[in-house]
Image 1: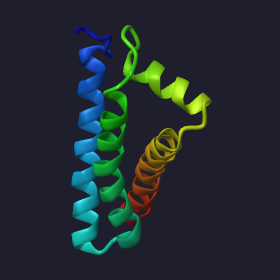
Image 2: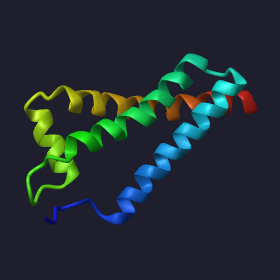
Image 3: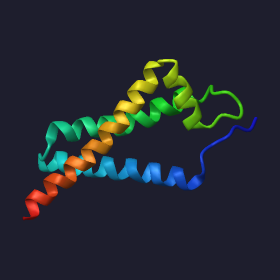
Image 4: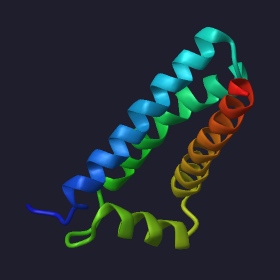
Length: 106
Protein backbone atom coordinates (compact mmCIF):
# COMPACT_ATOMS: atom_id res chain seq x y z
CA UNK A 1 0.00 0.00 0.00
CA UNK A 2 1.42 3.33 -1.06
CA UNK A 3 0.04 6.57 0.29
CA UNK A 4 0.62 10.12 -0.73
CA UNK A 5 3.01 12.10 1.42
CA UNK A 6 4.40 15.60 1.57
CA UNK A 7 7.71 16.37 -0.18
CA UNK A 8 10.91 15.48 1.63
CA UNK A 9 12.12 19.08 1.93
CA UNK A 10 8.92 19.94 3.80
CA UNK A 11 9.57 17.18 6.33
CA UNK A 12 13.15 18.40 6.80
CA UNK A 13 11.95 21.93 7.54
CA UNK A 14 9.21 20.66 9.88
CA UNK A 15 11.50 18.43 11.95
CA UNK A 16 14.27 21.04 11.99
CA UNK A 17 11.70 23.51 13.35
CA UNK A 18 10.61 20.99 16.00
CA UNK A 19 14.15 20.06 17.07
CA UNK A 20 15.23 23.70 17.28
CA UNK A 21 12.09 24.51 19.26
CA UNK A 22 12.76 21.70 21.73
CA UNK A 23 16.41 22.75 22.00
CA UNK A 24 15.67 26.41 22.64
CA UNK A 25 12.82 25.46 24.98
CA UNK A 26 15.21 23.30 27.02
CA UNK A 27 17.85 26.04 26.99
CA UNK A 28 15.37 28.64 28.20
CA UNK A 29 13.97 26.28 30.84
CA UNK A 30 17.48 25.60 32.17
CA UNK A 31 18.23 29.34 32.22
CA UNK A 32 14.81 29.94 33.82
CA UNK A 33 13.85 32.44 31.12
CA UNK A 34 10.20 32.23 30.07
CA UNK A 35 10.08 29.10 32.23
CA UNK A 36 6.36 28.25 32.02
CA UNK A 37 6.21 29.06 28.30
CA UNK A 38 9.31 26.94 27.69
CA UNK A 39 7.89 23.93 29.52
CA UNK A 40 4.65 24.22 27.55
CA UNK A 41 6.57 24.50 24.27
CA UNK A 42 8.65 21.40 25.07
CA UNK A 43 5.50 19.38 25.79
CA UNK A 44 3.76 20.66 22.65
CA UNK A 45 6.79 20.09 20.41
CA UNK A 46 6.80 16.45 21.48
CA UNK A 47 3.06 15.73 21.59
CA UNK A 48 1.82 17.59 18.49
CA UNK A 49 3.80 15.52 15.94
CA UNK A 50 3.06 12.31 17.84
CA UNK A 51 -0.69 12.95 17.92
CA UNK A 52 -0.64 14.00 14.26
CA UNK A 53 1.25 10.84 13.28
CA UNK A 54 -1.05 8.52 15.20
CA UNK A 55 -4.17 10.10 13.73
CA UNK A 56 -2.79 10.26 10.20
CA UNK A 57 -2.09 6.54 10.02
CA UNK A 58 -5.66 5.70 9.05
CA UNK A 59 -6.05 8.32 6.34
CA UNK A 60 -7.52 7.43 2.98
CA UNK A 61 -5.33 6.31 0.11
CA UNK A 62 -4.24 9.18 -2.13
CA UNK A 63 -4.53 11.79 0.64
CA UNK A 64 -1.42 13.39 2.11
CA UNK A 65 -1.02 14.49 5.72
CA UNK A 66 -1.98 18.13 5.16
CA UNK A 67 -5.10 17.26 3.17
CA UNK A 68 -6.10 14.79 5.90
CA UNK A 69 -5.53 17.43 8.60
CA UNK A 70 -7.68 19.98 6.77
CA UNK A 71 -10.46 17.47 6.10
CA UNK A 72 -10.52 16.37 9.73
CA UNK A 73 -10.45 19.99 10.92
CA UNK A 74 -13.49 20.76 8.78
CA UNK A 75 -15.26 17.88 10.54
CA UNK A 76 -14.30 19.33 13.94
CA UNK A 77 -11.99 16.55 15.07
CA UNK A 78 -10.42 17.40 18.47
CA UNK A 79 -6.96 16.17 17.54
CA UNK A 80 -6.77 18.61 14.63
CA UNK A 81 -7.78 21.50 16.84
CA UNK A 82 -5.04 20.52 19.32
CA UNK A 83 -2.52 20.16 16.51
CA UNK A 84 -3.32 23.53 14.94
CA UNK A 85 -3.43 25.41 18.25
CA UNK A 86 -0.21 23.69 19.35
CA UNK A 87 1.59 24.60 16.13
CA UNK A 88 0.42 28.21 16.34
CA UNK A 89 1.70 28.30 19.94
CA UNK A 90 5.10 27.07 18.77
CA UNK A 91 5.29 29.90 16.22
CA UNK A 92 4.17 32.45 18.83
CA UNK A 93 6.87 31.14 21.17
CA UNK A 94 9.50 31.83 18.52
CA UNK A 95 8.18 35.38 18.03
CA UNK A 96 8.30 35.98 21.79
CA UNK A 97 11.76 34.44 21.95
CA UNK A 98 13.09 36.81 19.29
CA UNK A 99 11.39 39.84 20.84
CA UNK A 100 12.86 39.03 24.27
CA UNK A 101 16.31 38.32 22.82
CA UNK A 102 16.31 41.69 21.04
CA UNK A 103 15.46 43.46 24.30
CA UNK A 104 18.30 41.67 26.10
CA UNK A 105 20.90 42.54 23.45
CA UNK A 106 20.26 46.30 23.65
